[in-house]
Length: 298
Length: 325
Image 1 (cartoon, rainbow over the protein chains, first blue to last red):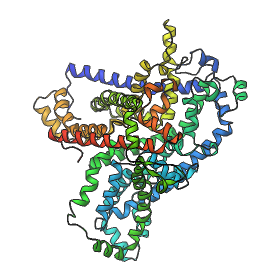
Image 2: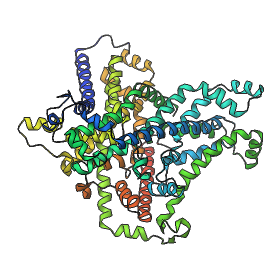
Image 3: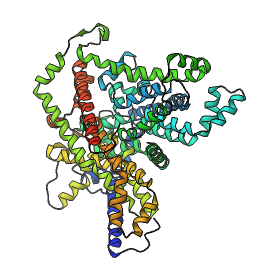
């Protein structure tokens, strides 16, 4: 704000307090992450003795060596990548197929169809009935169980519909005169013109798939189909009991490396987090935009 | 997601409904389908998705009134009326479950809910754009990681060799097994919840603040309003509407305390004091196979939540707020 040129001493004191205070808040938000990174890169003896804080002590990559050479981690990683890639593609396709017709204000079925969608944002069947439906479709222990039941997010559908509504009608009309059908209009006009929105939604969906933990926990029990988040959660939920905590990684291997679960767990965390961190700069920018656009419409 | 979606609901239904007020008859829809069948063809997979994965489970709630078993299926299973509800309400453990759920829910509502609001207000007072952006980037980060990730980090952080216990030991105190005692688990639960979502939760308020006409601030400045007065009388009222909506939606999720966080953080030995509805439904229903019994719990939860959201919405409206609907 341009008007705050002359500041009273009180205001100056407040500004200083605010800058320092928010800096401290930011520091402590990041602290646990940096600590985990440091632990993952440290010697396990140093970690056990509590000497690792924000900087790695006794540089050591054995945790990563164990994790990255573990076939179970590899399987979970491949499954997660697969589910994220295929899932996001299906998400975008389905969301576009819903958003485009519903963005046409003269669509006869528009209002009832929107109502049908909005109702599901307020009431849902709950964990058990959903589980039984997924089960009755024979999706249990299939990677598709992590994709099909999550094919559309109603919130994203409405966001994209709002975006499509902004595309000028005249473009559509002239395309129609040139003989284009609705599919051509969707794929040749609407989607190319909405690429920023589509990119945003892809990130929304992809991060959602990557982080999806509950669905995998519920629908997948076969280790060959399992995803990273559940693999990671095994280190967490079974804490304090070394035996189960590392059940998916051969014990001898860990003993040989002389690793304590802390180092190993930290290494798994970093490997799971890394792909999100790579896209985070974009994600953050787009997400914020998406939420702001969405909320201002309301 | 609930908070964000709530805001657009009005818009979503409104701009279709209000402008085209007149009701569409079936024949009109039929005519439209014949006119542009491809547009309707696109909606077919979408419709199938909603029917199969949103509405089928909604009607599947009926198994709460059945003695459902996998082999007989929905159609073959015996109807038992309110049997499961009677069993529930006679079970003292169910009361414990409800009390646990309410305890964590209320703690979240009271301690977690206001923080993003204050955070947004303080962020808004930062004068350096790049610094503000940096703080936002850092504080939004935990939101983008699942509870499996965040839980692992929290557990490392609070372990005997983690920074907090190391500090305690270097000061001559005993290390604390934070997650293994209910007296320390509860604060860890609340604080880790705050840590994960306070930054992200502030976005919706920042968005509302950014929509305020700057002339208001200038006029107030001309009239001699101090910065505090401008914040209290311009910024705060600008987000009041959003605060109320968020609060109402939170009340409508009273029994829906996050499954992921509790599942990840709570150790088995604290089960009697940390078991909440969702973790119980998961363990006894999905893992244990007691589908009808846990579906009854789920239905109970939905009814309470819907009642709460209706009541809070009505209270908000009677206080002159606009409410969610």
